[in-house]
Amino acid sequence: MKKIGVIGTGNMGTILIEAWLEAKILNPADLIITNRTLSKALVLKEKHPGIKVAESAAEIVEQADFIFLCVKPLQINSLLQGIKQHIKRDQLVISITSPVSVSQLESAVNAPCARFIPSITNRVGSGVSLLSFSESCSKEKVSALFDLASAISAPVIIENDITRVASDIVSCGPAFFSYLAQAFIDAACQTTKIDKETATTLTENMLVGLGELLGKGVYTLPTLQEKVCVKGGITGEGIKVLEAETGEMFHHLFQATHEKFAEDLHEVEKQFGHPY
Ligand SMILES: NC(=O)C1=CN([C@@H]2O[C@H](COP(=O)(O)OP(=O)(O)OC[C@H]3O[C@@H](n4cnc5c(N)ncnc54)[C@H](O)[C@@H]3O)[C@@H](O)[C@H]2O)C=CC1
Ligand SMILES: O=C(O)[C@@H]1CCC=N1
Image 1 (cartoon, rainbow, N blue to C red):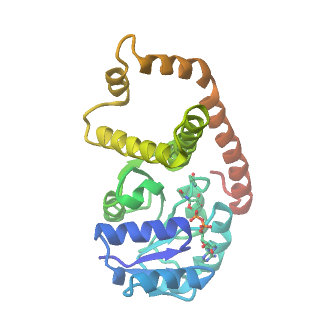
Image 2: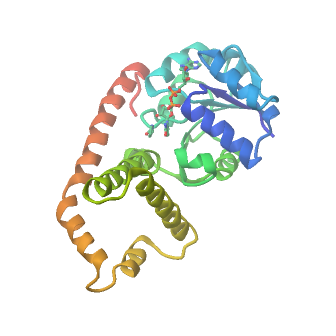
Image 3: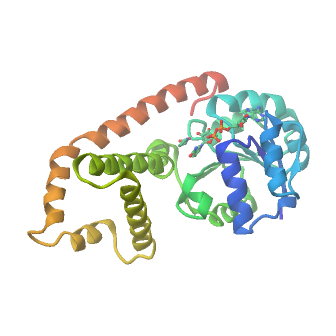
């Protein structure tokens, strides 16, 4: 197995590491990790003793074949400036964030680059990951990154032009639908006699069942809706309310994420001096 380096063991770095270990695609000894606040990386080593903790990003670059940059968009450029002189062409640099393109990464380092946008759902080996590769990635590198992605997700290759919306769906989606589920629970408690704990248990289990029906291919979203909506029945009355009141809510949501994305792109382009 290749040596996998992870720079940044915050939320997402940790999720990826633990997902790969649970999927048994990696052993702890395959990993070398670091974080600006080293204690965050040491917590992972305590849980998985074979993991090597490096004291600097430069040490990761010295020892890893794949270098995952699991930091925020505006932290990538300064991180790369500090390590680019040590990166060699037989390595692969992978960023996990959407506002930085592979072409921008490649403009900063003299090595093949890829982007791997994960989702919190990958923690349980589920959901999608969004992959992009620079042209200089060899078939062998593409296939090795695909294997890592496939072990914890269903990888999909995407172009820059749908990056934001694809990431909204696969990466932000879990937060959006959790928000809606909580609003559903709160309304149930406010309008009926159910208590929050019961409503939460019922809702969470309903969502798990819904996911399994879709995951096992028993229904699609439209066929499932049709099956539950008995003609002249109660679900149909609820659906009428949704049809009347959802309105342009999701249009506004996608507009808002794309506006914030445009701001991030602007800042990232200034840092890299290279277009997205
Ligand atoms: N949270 C999510 O569901 C998803 C997040 N992402 C992307 O993942 C990236 C990271 O997000 P989070 O893990 O939530 O952020 P986070 O803030 O929890 O983690 C970033 C970590 O990087 C460390 N760090 C920053 N600069 C560093 C440097 N120069 N050297 C070493 N360590 C450094 C920080 O100390 C921090 O622990 C973001 O760019 C985000 O867009 C992508 C898909 C989903
Ligand atoms: O880079 C992104 O688009 C992801 C989605 C959730 C957080 N960051």
